[in-house]
Amino acid sequence: MESPVTLGSRTPEEVEERRAALERGHPFLLFRDGDGQQRIFTLDEDADAITVGRRYEADISLPWDPEASRLHAELSLRAGEWTICDDGWSQNGTWVNGLRLAGRRRLADGDLVKIGRTIIGFHRPGEPGPGPTMVQGELSAAPRFSDQQQRILRALCKPLFADGDGFNPASDLEVADATGIAPAVVTQELDLLARLFGLEDMPRPERRAEVALLAVRSGLVGADDGTQA
Image 1 (cartoon, rainbow, N blue to C red):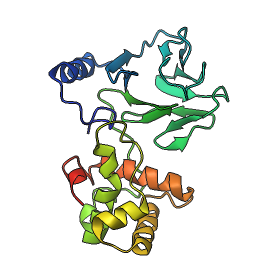
Image 2 (cartoon, rainbow, N blue to C red):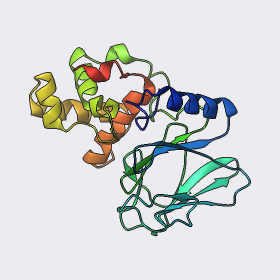
Image 3 (cartoon, helix red, strand yellow):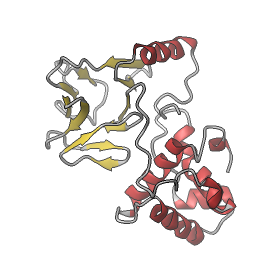
């Protein structure tokens, strides 16, 4: 599954750049600059820390992003795992898969980091994404979901496959409009899906974003599904 950062881009040059980065086998970050151009930043395991921010001195400089702080976040390698921390440097916070970062977090293949307006995909070739926190075998049980639940998931995830950032899922009202299902039923079904994914303790807005990302990562919703409701 491609990151939503790259969906909608079909230029042969960009596809070849991504293929080459994957074949090299080293972890890398993928994002777009202020002109919409693809950027690939290979993570050097010899680096003590990699800084991200609006300053030109940052290892990953985002001067085009007015919502990024001058020093926004830091990536570092800990026991063979790439981690990210904010430590209160940024005004607008750092977000991973729609959840605001608190402390330090380990990054997994396919994670989406939002810094200011910039979405950065973390890729670690050969490492599968983490998937949702569920009972063993539950993730592969897509047929257990009703037709109505699958329609709601497709509509919820549709913005993740759109051109541009495609980071935020559809609202309950947008899902209701796309599927013809009553808004109250949409909300009820999404709450149930969140419980199935083990996310019931999250606040509702963050929970919905995580449900959408997990549905895409797990293959419950694919790019072709994202074009229909």
